[in-house]
Image (cartoon, rainbow, N blue to C red; front, side, top):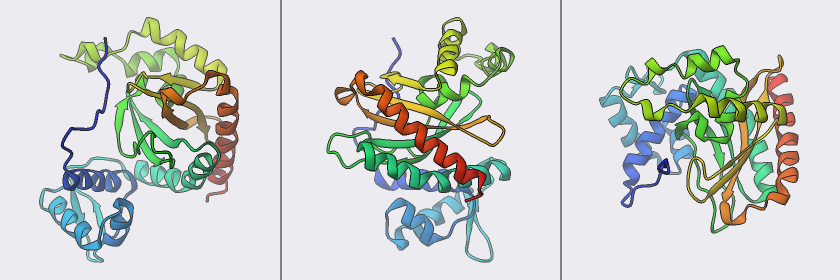
Length: 258
């Protein structure tokens, strides 16, 4: 049986979490100031400055002559990818907030890199029992709603390449069974949405739809996550309709360059 993923540590260290999130933000989005990092992390400017100083010391960040911070040499991500992720995130946030306002459940935007899915934006709902922010987290793509949606876009040859056995070396147990995965991806592709019932984490259900570019290719997954005790299958059609409307509006903003 697969173990649940991304269980928060019993004794979380806030400073470590903040530093890792700051590094992830710089990696995904590109140059930011101390004030911008402080706002994103919800910490004082002085705290953000100390975190960034340590990231610079360990080569996770660099500071230019204008006192703007960039991802350092330890973090390898193409400039084009950074700009695309930054654009997606900025455009998606108002739509994620609107989903939360309508459904009062946590909303997320996720992209895929090979066999992993990364949450690039997350807006939490206000309910006491809720799914927390997943922003910056990385999961196996086949274990997430958005990851499944994006994998469903691949041809058989592309899927074989993503999950080529030699890529897993001494980690064969992490490679999904493609004989099981392919039919599921076919169903998701035909249906246009995906449901993740405790696949990535116990006690969590997520529903998602793809976000497409002007050429019709899926570039991200838009999803809503909730505690499994609050998920009602009879509401699935309504959830998908709400997500579809948000995805179409996001696509229009992306096409307009907003």
